[in-house]
Image (cartoon, rainbow over all chains, first blue to last red; front, side, top):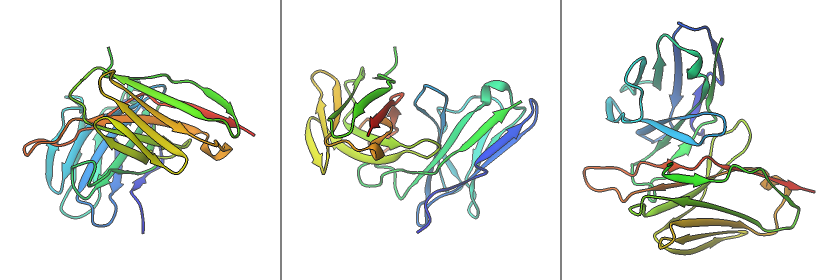
Length: 116
Length: 115
């Protein structure tokens, strides 16, 4: 069984470019979560999506960041006009439901974004 | 003040020793507590979860929750070099019908088990 697949594993962008991070959830999972991890910091929640719906985006910066989880295809985290401070590891997790004890979140191995 | 505090380490122990990890938190409404293990360049992997106060044991791992002190612990017995990783604590509120269990993570403690 394939786990949560994230690509690319590493992404290098210059300031002002766009970054697109992809996440394919585990088979049968319809809930997707995006987290950001900075050095020496824990995982910070960004956004929670179900198919075609954003459930909670309280952790997303108000500008330049957007996320989607279309009916077909992977979830996409999009960062426009990237800045140096966007350099981080971005992790995606998926679950069958949202209640952590019954439906734990399974994480991908992340995309490491570097901004030149 | 962060909602979840965790000493970043590194914590270095000899093989076979007991590893003791802990987190403190400020929000008394947290009810679910989890420990994740994260190897370098990998995603977090759920190790254990507990609800409310008490102990839970799974093989070499024991998780403890003391809600009165807002303190959780993870103990690893008979530690092995393969246990070398970063250990993250996480916690959430009780999800209600119109909410969901958002996870709050600690910063993680790096553990090094030396042969």
